[in-house]
Amino acid sequence: MCPDHFSPQKQSSESQESGAQFLADQVARRKNFAIISHPDAGKTTLTEKLLLYGGAIQQAGAVKARGEQRKVTSDWMELEKQRGISITSTVLQFDYRDRTVNLLDTPGHQDFSEDTYRTLAAADNAVMLEDAAKGLEPQTRKLFEVCRLRKIPIFTFINKMDRPGQPPLSLLDEIEAELDLAVWAVNWPIGSGEQFRGVIDRQSKEVVLFGRAERGRQSTERHLRLDDPELKSLVESELLEQALEEIELLDIAGSEMNLELLHAGELTPVFFGSAMTNFGVRPFLDAFLQMAQGPIARGSSDGLVDPLRPDFSGFVFKLQANMDPRHRDRVAFVRVCSGRFEKDMSVCHARTGKTIRLSRPQKIFGQDRAVVDDAYPGDVIGLNNPGMFSIGDTLYKGKKVEYEGIPCFSPEIFSWLRNPNPSAFKNFRKGVNELREEGAVQILYDTDQSKRDPILAAVGQLQLEVVQHRLENEYGVATRLEPMTFQVARWVSGGWNALEKVGRIFNCKTVQDAWHRPVLLFKNDWNLNQLKEDHPDLDLCAVAPVVSGVDPIEL
Image (tube, rainbow, N blue to C red; front, side, top):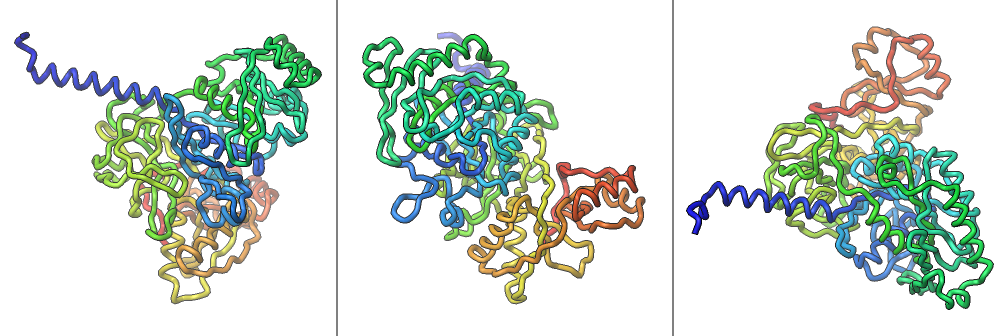
């Protein structure tokens, strides 16, 4: 036997190599993506069908479910179930074949775009969902720009092909022209509307035919080669010929598939199908898992952090209170960026420098959760939040690292939030502070300290209604909104000193945000432009810079 067989150094080296290989294998298994779309494009329905194919659920519930039909898994808030829309982000993990998929489900209402911005900060890929009849819509364009800024690969799923819609070639032209994005159709539809028969895979030359299934169940699939003589008896000849002619045109004049361009956010693979009837969902999932990029290196104070870095690190991208009203819980969603996360591990909180023991990590699945023993780059874990975490916080082990923060975006609607019952002030204060922490809405404060009521600032009116609904149902406080006449907000880049140098200003109101920074509110863009002309040296910003090392204002 070799004399160094029991050498502690050799055993340690072998252990490190084994650990590094295990980490690499786990990272290679993982794919992470968010779905972006305009309201009513079918985002939550597509989410449910992906979970269905992944075996995470046995029956999919339509987003417009009522009465006896089950509610969708990803919509957990009572208001979502009442209105049949998604207004919060949730995280859903499932295994499919040899992959672990982390799906970040985002709000489907235009009023909640800021929550989607935060979720995209945790995503490695994005799926852009389009309605075949409507094509690109305003919310989709706005979210696409966020993806482009972050250089996130985009996969396009054109939905509702079983309903009347625009010609497929026109939909591709629109994406190329309006988004300046090269397109490559992975599959091509045979017919549309009532004549939708399935899709042709352009690479394998395989036809996938779908039989309509009972609502919510997996549809039947049939795979045939293009040269199979039986195909002519199953699909009308004119529909098949038209699809083949269009594919030939794409082969001649269309873009070529290029993974480098895809991962750089310059090319989008396009899939056609119908989430409601399961047309094209499985081919999309199979192709996505082949082409999507895995967990990527992320920018930090210490440069790019490789997911294979041995030490754990991650950042908080979302906070949520009362996901389980029975336990009055507060959950911080953490995207794992490097190393291996383990239950009960102690980590450093970069903003405060404190050491925290993460004793009850959870895997979130809609409203359901289970204790998780470990997690790897690309995964999202839920941590109990005793008021210590803020959006953008970094947790790490080993050498200090702090990830780039998540900025605040300019709100457009402002209202005083009044508490008409002084005896409920304690619950009112707790509710406002916790909802501010999770980013449900931005909170502004009057510079006059005697005015204690907060100002709610949001992108859309529904955000304000959700705050009222949650204050009443989760904290037992009925409130009143008093709309303000302002429509534009700008942060003063130079802070209070820069504002004092300007002196008195007109046609705007000065307030402060939760981090003590001055914010100017304007009634319209004309007033904003007038101030810029009067004070050209005053630097105003529509996106608030990231704050670190500052405790927020508590009501």
